[in-house]
Structure formats: structure tokens, C-alpha cells
Length: 467
Image (cartoon, rainbow, N blue to C red; front, side, top):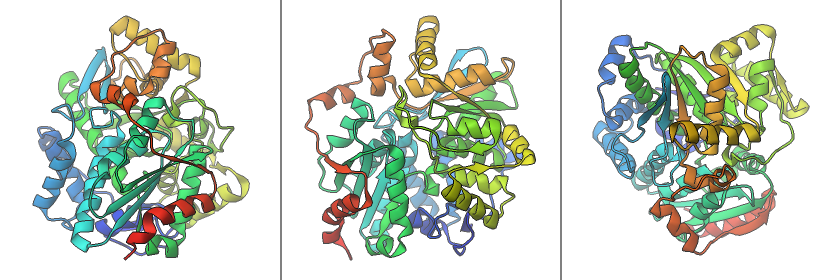
């Protein structure tokens, strides 16, 4: 198994090197040279597996022996041993043909735990094997930061810095990040948006000399392992729902801002999973909806919403999909990304737009619609949706044929976004782990959203451990 860059200027590399490189050195994103194909017969045998065994089957096809099988199994068992539910990602039926996939049973109550518990343990494994101190750098719109910190806090040989937009995440999201006082954790609250943080992260990773000097590693979904770990729950959900309904094809509605979670579904489909429609659910930061419906990818004005984890204008994983849309042509991808840099937009032709609309449907959910969906489902079914999941359900209602089975990804526990839940007049009970956060001290630095400020703070965390 070899990995290549979407822009074509990185030689073929293996799985471990892909993990460590994160963002490709040419500024592109790393993808498998060939996507493993799973036969119908193999799918049938995989449908009987536990979540952990299923994860091994899928991930091992990309690892391709670089990690011995038993050591990989141990990494997977350790990663999902922290989850509160025995199925890891249970599927709940809400109505006929409508299911939710609960992805919030990990330590920080968000879907990011599924990938980041594994990636954190994988980084620790690599650090021990190589003796190299790993410095992790990431930006978050809310959930990635807490999950990433939880995945590596206190681990020997790893230090982590997370940027989050000051005042633009929920109270619980901020507390989950900033109440961690481990020596190897630094929280920087930037006076800007998530897109500002993401841009600065990419600038630092493209500076190859700086990246190599400090052994910088990526925790955002620019790292292919994030995508890979998330494909597993598409397979798991499909198997559960197909068994119950007898349907051979299942649709998925996916709340997404950075295009990573839904790209994992796209990858699962390309591997051979019988996925039908992939529904892109966004909020008012609806650049992805505009692309699916009109073929133009153009950032608009940033808006703070009830679903802050999706308050993103520039979706980092979009380039991975663009690679396949442009017939796996790196030169064409580079040209489109250059166009985006110079003109602030990417446009595709009519034939390509037809392909986009064959691959995806999309719906941007306004604030009132989000809250109305939370209230409606709580009143009618007793099921409490967090605001991101509510966007997914609202998109399901507008874009899914009622005769077709659809699974909406429930990406976070509603307790993480009580500000939105309270607006619906709903009083919820907080899990004990979240209750305890409100009594803890916060540790973070508030900084300007510029590269110099970030680098200055990174020097303090990283420089004394450079090897």
C-alpha cells in the first residue's frame, strides 16, 4: 500500500510515513494510490464482526503489514477500551427507515474520539518505536481539540498545541480543552475564526524545514488516518441497519464542516460498501451546499451558529474529493487549488457537476430550522438531538426519499451544546464527567490570529525537547 499527494509532487510513501507527514509536503493531501476493494462475499463475513474486529479488518488493509497484526489489534483495543458503550457506535431506530448512529460514547462525548483515540495511541506507538519526540499541532472548531488532547495527554514522547477560536466554541467544548493541566498540553485561543487557525496550521506544515526541525505532526483531518478510522463506523452502521431492514442499500446524512466525516463515507463507498446517497448537512456556513447545488466552491461571510463545530468556510478535505472528481489528475487538482488561491473560488463544468450531484445531496440548515428540529424530535420521539445532529436530521428530511433507509450521524452528545438546547426550552441532565468541568480552573493563552504569535508560543512548548 502506497500513499501519494493529491498534487502529485510527493513520492510514494508507506502508511507510517503518511501518518507522520500529515499534510503532504507539496501542500496537497495524502491519499492511497489504490483504494482497497472489498468483495460482496468479504462484506458478508465482515458483517458478523465486533466493532474492534471490523476496525482491524479495514485499517489493516491500509497498514499493509507495517505494524504487526497483534500490535495493531492491541492499538485498536486500547483505543476503544475508553468508550462507554460496548458497541462503540450503536445504531438507534427513531422512526421507520430513519436511524441515528451514535458517535458520542467516547471520552469527550464527540465523534472525533473515534479517530483521535486511535491516532493518539498510534503516535505514542511510533514515538516509542523511533525514540522521537512528537509535536502535534492542530486547529479546532470545538470538538477536535478536546478529543485530540484526551488522546495524547500525559503520554511520554508527545506534546500537543491546539488552536481554537476565542469565544466561538461552546462552553463545554472550551472547558474540555482548557481544564487540562498536563505539562505536554498547550491551548491557544486565537482572536479569529477556525478558518484562521486552519490556515496558519497549513502554513506551518508547508514550511518543511520548520516541520522537520520540530517533528510537527498533524491531528486535524488533513491526516489520512483520521479519515480511515471514520470509515469503520459507516461499515458498522450499514451492517446493523441492513440486518434489521433487509435493505441492500443505505443512505447517510452527515453533519459536516470540514468535509472529513462525509469523505470517510465516500471512501467507504469506493471500497465497495453499498452506500446510496450521501447527504451533506451544513449550517449557514454553507460553502459545501453551494458546491453540490451549483458547482461553485466559494467561501462566504463567516457566521456564528448554534452548531459551532460546523462554523467553517474552507473545508480542508474538499481537495481529496476534488482529486477523484478530476479523474485522479494531480495537475488538474493543482490548477484548481491555484485558482482558489488567486480567485477565491473553484468552479466545475456541467459534466462534473452532474457527477457531484450523483455522489451527494446537500442542505444548509438555518438557525431556526435547527432549533425547530431539536424541539420536534424531542416532543414526538423523546430523542434529544444535539444541534449538529439536528442539522443532519433536517437535511435528511429535505433530501431523503421516505421509502429509502437513511442513517444520520449523531456527532455529539447534546450536553456539549446546552446553550442551544436551552433555547428550545428543554432541560437536560448532564453526564457526571461534564458536570465536573464547571468546577475546574482553565489554562489557555489568548493570542492574535497571526503566524508570529503562534510560532512564539510553540517555541516555548517545543524547543526544549528538540532532538
